[in-house]
Length: 300
Image 1 (tube, rainbow, N blue to C red):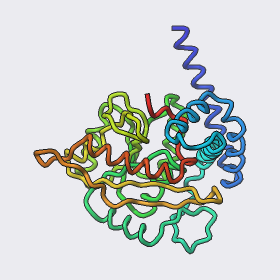
Image 2 (image 1 turned 180 degrees about the horizontal axis):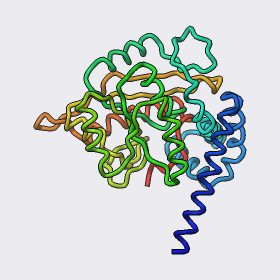
Image 3 (image 1 turned 180 degrees about the vertical axis):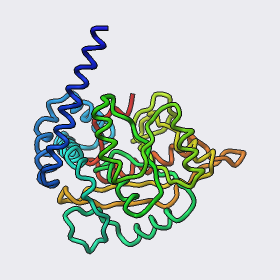
Image 4 (image 1 turned 90 degrees about the vertical axis):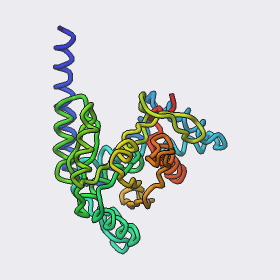
């Protein structure tokens, strides 16, 4: 009982401090805050246990890279993570623009990508997969600004005050958020049946997942997106955000529909589809390895 009460008090204190920090960052210029946060994590990150995890995984994924190259990638990973944290409270300032724009708060969509997004939005309900690269939160911003009727699956933070703050910050800049839980598949299926486009992150370890190969190594992937596609025959797209060289502007990209393997009965094959999705994500990560979250233990 005492331990439970102590945890409750600690969570309240941590939540209050975190919410206060978020409010303070909101008062700061986005680029300045991101530059500072990135700089701090470039120095502090290597001192944390997650740094070793990232180094081990990078060495396994890229056996041909030197220690200096691995260190360079990890420095970028920490820089990116710091920037994501600072940018979170400034999502409402970002704007989807064309490549000719010089906006400081740009998420650039090339004409081909803009046309593809609009075609997707105007069609039947779709499923979209995302991964933890660059600032993944901005995918929801793109969908909202383009007028998509969309929803996002997300994992609710454990501390209530932080969870409430996160929901409030996201509410105005992206579609409805569906928390992970036992009822999430049913809620998502109902949304899809109602014509809502659904997006979800799919690149983290899931204990009860299906086996896929990622960088030549076996790992577990959450099959929910493939299961929903199989149930409702929804097309699956990949969405990603790329951080541009100035580190403060972005480019959005969307794939064509993923080719979903079929079983002998003509139904979408769940394991094969998750492997197809994983192959796309691996290609993204290989292109910009410093922008992916190597700090999460993907292989277990």
